[in-house]
Length: 314
Image (cartoon, rainbow, N blue to C red; front, top):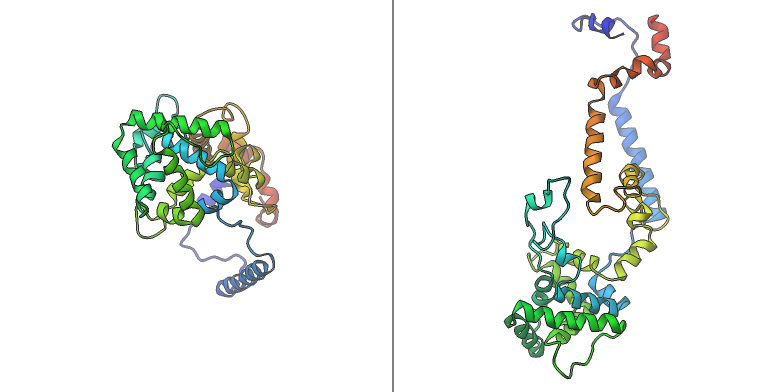
């Protein structure tokens, strides 16, 4: 077939069958029909998206979880604190073999959880007690800060439900005041604004609140699991609620459910690298040896284009 096609002279006038076809008319009809269906279905079913999670909703729904996470941010024990690039240098990041792409990219979005999530927002408050606690924290050494915060975080975790613990001996330093003050900001909604506008006057950067939420002990993970969005629930291809999601992402989700990806700390980079290789293979199908010959050995295309082959006599 390829040899016959190669002998066709493209400069010659087409003498085969023709029929009228109005491309503009077809395009307009398609746009009108699809637009009508989209608007009608949107009006009938509305949007499947859930209301956005915020610091305020977290503080009100799970106050103990919020204050425990805040204490963990000050102690440097949360996921964000040890994440590594692009946020900080406290973790190795993911690598593929001997290549550490995270370190190669470096820290591009500097995040110090204690400073970014707690101290900076509290600096915007006018309360003298809060500012005194902030000053006390800033003036202390890193070792003393860690000692205060770790002791308070451990005590809160052990207690499990209190929003603040008494400190007659002063071993927690300013940490109780910092934690309860941030909880107060979150409850009023002020923390959401402080985190999204800390780097810009326009509230368009949600990196900090998202990282803070992701550090939560149970609130955020429980919300995700309830909507079937966690990794072991094929979350990347699901929509919230019972609505169908991005089914074409099933191939990405698949690898997270099997070994060695399932238990690997480098799962993300391994999966994306594998998908990159598979996508490249798909692009190169026409030139790959053996694989490019499959259509000749299994000529499914002749079944699909059987009318054309029948008329052409091939």
